[in-house]
Image (cartoon, rainbow, N blue to C red):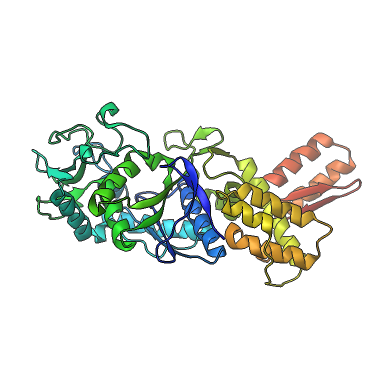
Length: 455
């Protein structure tokens, strides 16, 4: 199998390259000061689907994903960064905060059946590497020490700056997101900080040739990707919000260090809305994997819904779509159990072509629905095709369904609904049905009875 995928830089679908028989992948990881919400996790699912598709075709993948656990996510040096702010809120140390949310990040990845990367380097543990990369940029005249003692990248030193985002240096305005508003030591307003002097900050600072301080946001990904992927990144994955300035600046740094194009293909996943709105803390609509579990939903219902949408199309997630996915997953697992217990796989040409053509997961999902209902396929063939597809879809379709005992209060509601139906009190019957369904029951009414399913 070969995988062709949309490259943000070239604006076309291109075949994924490889280095010495291995596809080198880098995915920008989380900043660990809070739980990753479902929108964040869509990006990490994208890297998982790419890796699984390549592996399905017999290729080897080396995936590196950084952990941002250093304090730099602030607009200026006078305000606290996110890690330090959360550490104060929880009355524990900044690094305890980082370790806490890093662990929870890995837990959420496992819940979504996202395979672990080959490495998760932490920024705090690769400071020597980051400082070395900055030194190299200074030696190559791509960076300079500003009048304030901080180190800045010289944006004008790379003639092709803007190739990913389409932004031109002369058109950029000062003070874009994640850049400091007090960078008075810069030569040009579009330059960015590689190393900031500590100023009054006393936590999360490190020694350097330029004095105590901390790294800028973009340099850590350059340092880690070049080091752990042998200076060749075949495929670089991230959310669309990272296209600029992060990936544009990362490209400038990496290309300047190796004097070549460091990344073969840039892949970006689109935004995820929830109930029609962008997820934000201020809007109160941030959804976590834990929220799905609290509602009695299988976390893989989220994976199911995301698979039914193109990775580079903005999508709107709803509780209704998650409920439907939960029920469909249960039905498919019941079908798998009815088809036997074979672990054999049968390659399906349509699924294969869908996945290798810009990762068309909606088409692959549509195909398995058709296979499930195809009366011309034997049960063992259906199971074998599902086994094949699930190597990429990762929906754990062979999982056995364990039915939990029905709580006594739900038994009482079912009995009350039986009485309402016999008395033809349809308003009461509908009201009780909605209550039962909100608790996770699937109700199927017959002419003279009600049937239900409970997971």
